[in-house]
Image (cartoon, rainbow, N blue to C red; front, top):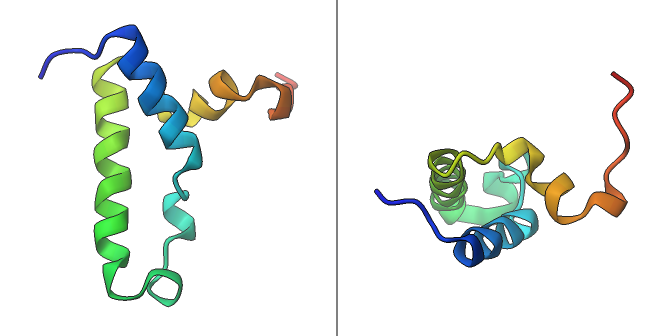
Length: 72
C-alpha cells in the first residue's frame, strides 16, 4: 500500500479524532454493528501506522490546545 499524501493524511487524522475510541464501542451503544465499528477503527489505526503516524498522538497533533502537557 502506498503512503498517503500530506492532505490525505491530514484528512484521515482529523476524521480519526472524531471516531469513537475502541474502548467506548460496546454492543449496548452500537447494537449489532459494534464489531463493524471496531473493525473500522482498527483499519484506520493500521493505515495511520503504515504512514508513520502514532494513532495515540493524533489528537494532540490535530488539537494541541486541548491536549494536556506531558510532565515527563
